[in-house]
Length: 448
Ligand code: SF4
Ligand code: SF4
Image (cartoon, rainbow, N blue to C red; front, side, top):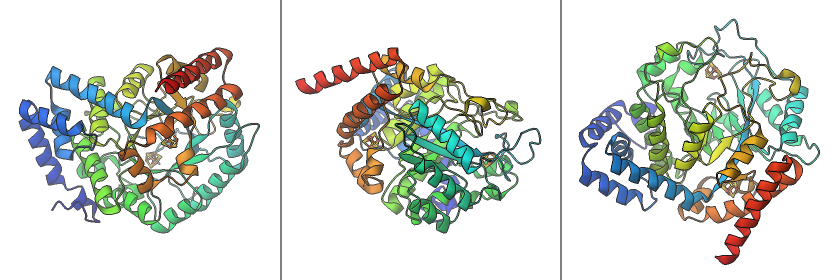
């Protein structure tokens, strides 16, 4: 039975509700009257239900699709302005007891060199990240007795306490395995930013095939983890599916139902939604993934998530190519990783091999190059962490976004933190580009 407020995964992500919503979308994907009505509703920037959003996603009428893309651009501009928040992933350990068949860190991959950073090595990684200008990190770790919660907490403390030259990491987001309410409380007390946990796929049967062994094999425990995180006091949480593991429409509907559930039960939807796609990696046979998502579908997914869940930040990683990231930025993505290494210990110059990479990086450019590229496209790269530092999290943050009041904060803070970046870390050409953008923004604001 579908029950949005249930605490049970199989009820708030009810399979029959997803299947019926898919049928509804397939019966209405060319229903002009309905599509126009949905566009009118979405134009109010208050979002759409999972069923309504599914119709837009399936629509193949070129003129309606153009309207969807235009609306995604408008909503993004209205709610977030033209800032793009920068972050970097920091891989702490690739030891893992789980058997996820799409991830090279799975326990049976004997070719994968295993590594767990010591606190001294973490400190070196952080100095290397600070030296290129990062202020916001997302820590990643496999699930293993070698990396208990105490190790994660100690690592967070190490990261926050390194103050090198002009740098300091101001926000540590955490992407670790599903855990207990008690452990989430400890993470909250350690001042984490967002707790991110990808569902991978909402399709239970596929989930079980893709996760044959290890604690992650428990679909309900994994799917209910975000609720436990919120119960533990973490009010900024991030959702995501790995598109390509199951039918994209199924997972898209599941993702929106999860967001609706959080809002209904916790009063706050997800702070971020990530949109990774399955990609090549060591010991992962891509031929077994028959649901691979084409670029055109990926772009549509980004745009329809943007118009359906307007208050949520969207993240794209360096798995995506430069071209694909350009399109995703235009259609709704508001956070971007840059200059990333997906290896354990990858940021120190002498450890830059891909042996321990979780996935292949398609965008290999340095942070400086990514910042220059964003400036060329008219965006303001931002190193802002102000909301987190001022306690604007959870429901407080959401009410500001929903009221259209965050873009003003974002733009001012983006300009200040960009200037800081340009002065301290940028190459001369990026510095000149950035200073011009800052002047132009100031002029624009004076005239307004
Ligand atoms: Fe382990 Fe995460 Fe990889 Fe699964 S996806 S094998 S849990 S690191
Ligand atoms: Fe993010 Fe808040 Fe800064 Fe805007 S003002 S970039 S929402 S931290």
